View 1 (cartoon, rainbow, N blue to C red):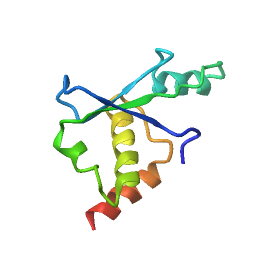
View 2 (cartoon, rainbow, N blue to C red):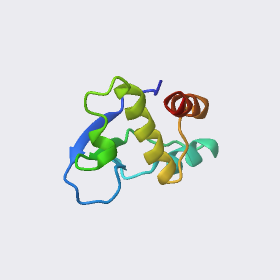
View 3 (spheres, rainbow, N blue to C red):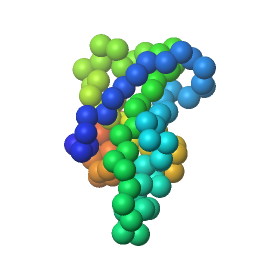
View 4 (cartoon, rainbow, N blue to C red):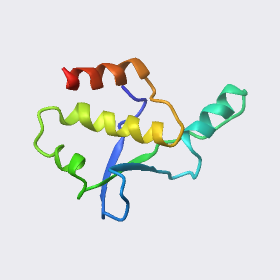
Length: 101
C-alpha cells in the first residue's frame, strides 16, 4: 500500500488525540510533496505513527479482526489532520466504508 511499512509506536497519554505523526527529518509529508511537485529534491519522509494507548479508539484495535484496516485508517487520519493526503485516497474511503457497513 504505502511505499514503506508504516512504523507504529505506543505513547503515554499526553495528548487528547488518538494518533499523530512524528518525523525523523523534521519535514512534513505535505512539504515534501510540495517540493517534489515544484521539481525540487525532497528527502523521503517516513513518519512514525504514535498512538495514545489509553484512547478508547486505540484500545479497540487490540485483538480486532480489522486491525490492519484500522491501523491504516489511523495513519491516514493523522496525515489528514496535519493537512496532508493519504497516499491512496480511494483505498482510504474503501476501508472506512467497509467498516461502516
